[in-house]
Image (tube, rainbow, N blue to C red):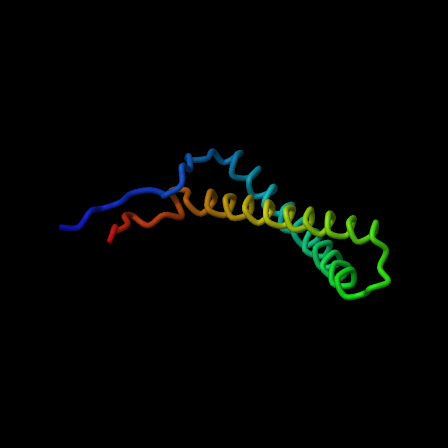
Length: 104
């Protein structure tokens, strides 16, 4: 016997048109911000590589580089997590769902 599963696996509520427009604007802003965050991560990755490979790199700059590299990684991860949730929230609205989903 097959179980029929309706709805999302996330706890996603149905949005009004105004909430959907707000979520789309937030997603659009987040997309551009993620580009900026990834560029910053690429810069700090380069600086981290320099700090690890150059023996004449000052110790106080090395510590700062590792700190900012970790912070840039955290910002990219949090932005991608929020982006994934917003995309799932917008896609799981009733007009985007199939009539039913089979649970295997």
